[in-house]
Amino acid sequence: MIQSITILPGRNKTGNPETFDRIDICPGEIVGVVGPTGSGKSAFIEDIEQLAQADTPTGRRILINGRVPDQVLRFDPKRKLIAQLSQNMNFLADMTVSEFLMLHAKCRGKGRDLVDQVIYHANTLTGEPINKEMNLTVLSGGQSRSLMVADVAFISDSPVVLIDEIENAGIKKHKAMELLSGNGKVILIVTHDPLLALLTGRRIVMKNGGVEKIFSTTQHETDLCAELNKIDRELFRIRECVRLGEEIVA
Amino acid sequence: MKVIVVAGTPGSGKTAVLINTIKALKNRNYKIAVAKIDCLYTEDQLRFRKLGIPTLVGLSRDMCPDHYTIYNMGEMVSFARDNRSDMLIIETAGLCHRCAPYTESGLGVCIIDATTGPNTPLKVGPFLSTANIVAITKGDMISQAEREIFRERVTEMNKECRIIETNGLTGKGSAELAVCFEEAPEFCYEKDQLRHNAPFSICTLCVGEMKIDSKHHRGVLRHINGVQKYIGE
Ligand SMILES: Nc1ncnc2c1ncn2[C@@H]1O[C@H](COP(=O)(O)OP(=O)(O)OP(=O)(O)O)[C@@H](O)[C@H]1O
Ligand SMILES: Nc1nc2c(ncn2[C@@H]2O[C@H](COP(=O)(O)OP(=O)(O)O)[C@@H](O)[C@H]2O)c(=O)[nH]1
Ligand SMILES: [Mg+2]
Ligand SMILES: [Mg+2]
Ligand SMILES: [Zn+2]
Image (cartoon, rainbow over all chains, first blue to last red; front, side):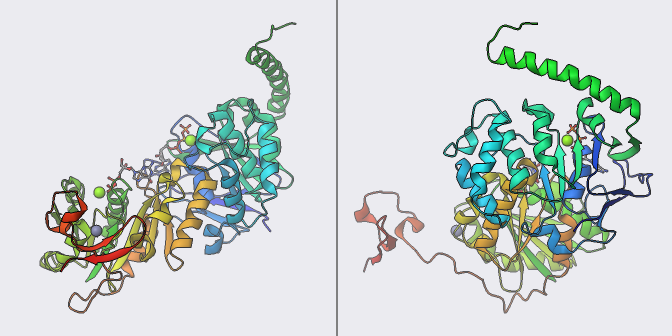
């Protein structure tokens, strides 16, 4: 069981120590990671994925329940506590969707019955449907991304979920967040999207490879988020009309 | 002295991973020598020499680079001794997938590129299956699911090995690899032997035959139907 994840400071790209003491994150919390491109957002969540022990370029250390985690938690996929949706949008493996999902389920010690479930949910996120017999490498960016999301949600199903830029592939991002977040998970989400950033309780601001500061989301920001969501839903509706080749009516 | 043999297909990230690992070892005051074996051409020596590491280059030309590595092991060891090194790291080209230049008392390190797909570990043979350490590179280019499948496939081919996920660009995994290099056994050139035999099929092509008609061919030959036999005197 996970009660907390702790990040201990390392160094930024210039080699200067980071200024926070420690960052503790508890189950049920959603934390954002924001900052300009190249500022080290992906590196930050990769440290968590690897349960870094001062052995990555950033020098950060990660504790679980206040302690240095057991080596096997780092490597054995069956016992892995962390699921990661990384930034890359494409699959490179030359196999069919169902072969791939079956292999991954086996690695994670899960049943093959999940395969249909994953494909079903992936198809709720994307336009043209994915089917079992398709080769992974022919999937479009959006289809690949949807499959990755559903795979993380059902096969990698872990108490800690790391999400790197879910917004870019043109999939239904709120629906995707719903699938990924589930109850009582620790969620870290890297994002450039204000809607997703304001959805979190806290956000970590990155600069030059280091943590620059940590904000708690204010009431004003939460209210703003609700307003922005209305606009976003309207934009989404219009975008769907355009996509489906329909006329946009008031 | 310790001898570390690092094998992997071209472009798999051997030099990139080694550069990061050597930096970590230099910080711990180890004296290192590198020997780089390739077939026709290499510029890797420039990258190693930039770190101030004495580097010997060998080009195998017409010979299998792994066979060439084995025949020249003595000279590479002397080169490292002359430089008073604690550790000799040999980067080989490892092309034919049938040979593996690892020896019993040297540390065998296989570098394998995760972007080549999860079937690759099933294809590459002894340079993976007889390695002590398998360093997987380029995991940054694929999803976590693909990384996990790749890792499982490596384990299927080599149950004993230690797997290290590395990244030649960021240096991920190199600290862990450096510790493995430090803990490698002492090398004994005079008593050492290969872990895996080199291919025993010596044929007329090996000694320069150019004609393709099968009537010109002699030696231990394997047919496409799986039959292997000796043809000759
Ligand atoms: N603390 C650090 N020390 C050294 N290198 C670092 C550090 N943090 C990040 N880097 C390196 O900087 C580069 C850019 O970082 P990263 O990919 O994490 O940026 P990003 O914020 O995710 O950018 P993008 O928005 O484009 O995805 C990477 O090569 C990474 O390894
Ligand atoms: N994305 C990525 N690229 C890598 C990684 N490791 C190496 N590379 C790149 O792969 C290419 C080949 O690397 P090199 O070390 O020369 O391979 P070698 O032929 O096996 O020695 C170079 O362009 C490296 O920068 C990695 O972990 N991730
Ligand atoms: Mg990034
Ligand atoms: Mg090289
Ligand atoms: Zn050979």
